[in-house]
Image (tube, rainbow, N blue to C red; front, top):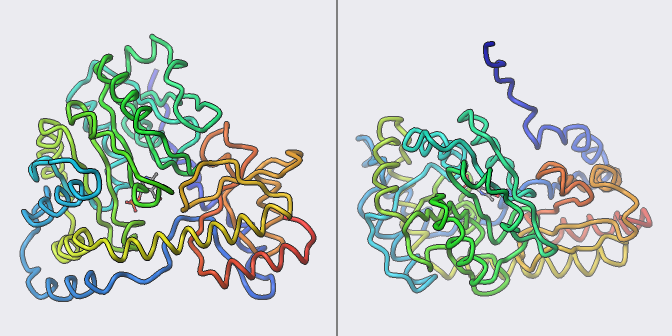
Length: 378
Ligand SMILES: Cc1ncc(COP(=O)(O)O)c(C=O)c1O
């Protein structure tokens, strides 16, 4: 029997169009907290580097990243995590979404004997989509009460077939942050079973404390995925990188060369400037922490409680009395002009929550709270 044709499911955020229309007509306009879309300024050194590099961008850029880009990634990992990394273990990606979506396919070509992608049961939808696009099995790993992976619940049948495991700490959408020993435990678990561990660490700078990295357990079989989108408000630039196992990085670099996955040279130059500067990150971190406090103080009395982790980029909210599911909560918020993402978009286990991205200026968040308070509930 021929395989069923692939029909792309509705894109998660397109499913919010009706709520978006509802919120847009509320006086004062929509406060869109549904997407982790940074709204704060692009750092000055980034703009300067972009402008300086643009006139020289007549030739094709290096797929793997320029020597400066790779050195910049390695140097940042050195400063942030205290690890000594060879720049050759760094590979450029065009933002990280494309890398997340294409990695299972590329790994499967290298190891056709394994057909399963393990990923957190409540998570960024692209993990499961990457498996689907590769024709592989996407198997969700249940989370524990603190929203971390419970690897003890993966069956031997699934782990024997597993090609790779995604981890994501600090986590989207739950804001959970695994302690370093849990991260090390996941690496050990995967290594024991010869499963490649891909650690999506794109929120590392906004962890509500000291971030940890899977690379602290060594790079063998590990890829750490980092993005400039959130760290440096560069989502529109499309800049990210992967660091880790030298053999895997070399292999992926070769495949990506054939596929033409090149980060434009001026963007690479801008990313080098971003990676060299920590001051703007500290400023941005303060903004998110402030917004988190503002929203927690305002939403809790209205009956919306955050029971996710400490990372200050998202709130993971549920109604206090737990009578409503995430779609109902999101509908109520949209009627009061605020758009959030129902937790079911991140997996069925998230259905009773909503995710609120703290990616709006304080005055817009204050407006959202004022309107919710006037409605008498959240
Ligand atoms: C967990 C996670 N990984 C990866 C990405 C992709 O980010 P980008 O493609 O901008 O690097 C996102 C974006 O929101 C995300 O939340």
